[in-house]
Length: 114
Image (cartoon, rainbow, N blue to C red; front, side):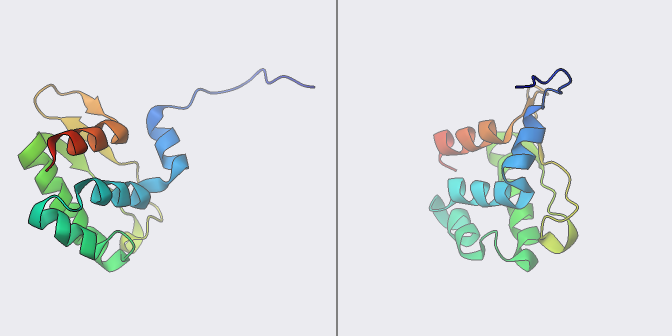
């Protein structure tokens, strides 16, 4: 059995892209927010599976994350909201200036109940 001598450590952001992509991350944000008041209900109805609605949902989520949790989000949905050609989603804690992973953002949403 050969052992690998040249390998590269994947960054967390790269692992998140491989595990589902940016539209999947949008679905996860919707699921975390869904059922939490009026905004969550709207996002749940629009869903992340409608490329034409993804842009609207992403804009709403970005606004709520910033206003409610102090998180600046850059949600990239690619061509026509399909995820094709999208860049990795990024999240920043405005107060600390620290980058956050997608998993950390989901955890904050669930713990705050926005």
